[in-house]
Image (cartoon, rainbow over all chains, first blue to last red; front, side, top):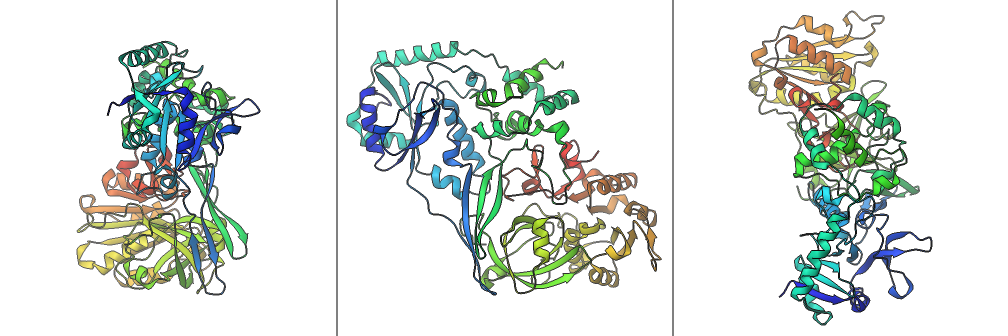
Length: 349
Length: 279
């Protein structure tokens, strides 16, 4: 099969409706406050699909929710039982309108949640999910996926990648699941012409020239890999400006630190919950009894930045920042990852 | 061991016996309620389990019993926070949840033929006790065994029954307390003061250390002075942990995770890691 197809924009909703029979659709919606957020869609008629703006949050909450029940536990009286009952999995997810950065982040999450066997909660949602991405013809103000090499167009990882060509999408078929989808709903697609592919290439070139930020990520990574410690004042200066809000970790599509807590419901029942956490929180590493092996006043942001830009480069061969730029928008202390990259580049070797 | 496919689900285990080691430390002997699971459960000295206490959450606790001995799994626990306080209120017959074992164990096979110096502070003796008992059960495979054990006061000396047994079995046990008291005729001072009483052969000695960071720093310096290499100075670290599986990252030492890369580390592996608190 030709892996370049055309899907008319007029047919898109109709295709999505078909797919919604078997999938829970997650797509960027514009809400009544004017915010664009990924949300689960029950009925396409009542919502405003927004493929113009960058969704303010990534797909992370749908695969790794901010808070989720890991299991219910029950105590069955005197010398009885202590039982643990995990939840059932729901219908498979279909993600539509996913930007290259966010999709790249999902590929990273796949790796992280495969440590020591597959994470049952993450893969219950990820397994059987479909990823339909939308290439970025126009990067947003804080984007720097050109530096992180996770966009603006993808070469792999998607089931289908759409490129907006005006009244139609050029459709590239990626993974097997995407081929299956196209095969099953063949009548929605027509083969792409040579001109369509040229138009896509043109869109990619234009997109690359529209980035507003110059982020010298590779230079910063080389400096970090030099194994020469950064000036203490650089770390302390970042720590002073961090307000410990955790916003950067929450909007970050690749931050996966979590905590686990029990919530008692009755005398004999409760739930164990997993919730997002952040290594920037002062108490993240604090032990029972109060000792903390990490001095937050000095090193509050050290783990965040080195994990993404040094430790993951060593472990996975690439940084785990995908250049979505969301932390630039959310950090009111001005200590987002681009600030860090800039500071590292300024340090004299 | 067969698994239920969800590494986060604990298995119920019954408290068989509680031993009060001192006012702060209790030892809990546990057995999985499923006898088959209990038989199949294997572990190595230095590993830990995640312990669930009803309504109290979960915490990592190192195993203090030795796999060479029959019976239950023993966890020695110092009352340090909410979960451990709740565990201290529990009695024989009650249930906890267990999952694991996790973590890299002490390299007991590589240590064969060597003289072993155990250095512990307070509850730090718990993970080392597992190794001492394993060595005693395979006595011919190890050289001299020496224990340096520091406690705050004579009343804080824990694991009395174990110490007595080890002495009888030929382990050189040297004790010290930070503050002496009436009736105490032994050594007073930090655990490092005991080094004056030993003269190990650095070529055939390895040290296994567990205690607070400041103790480890001074002990490691003493051992280095005695000629032990960074490879032969081995410790086990305590950290806040939530998953035990290398995912939640609470136990990070910068690039390393205590749950997955440790908790047992050589001094050589810890050098240069800021979060290892070597300075």
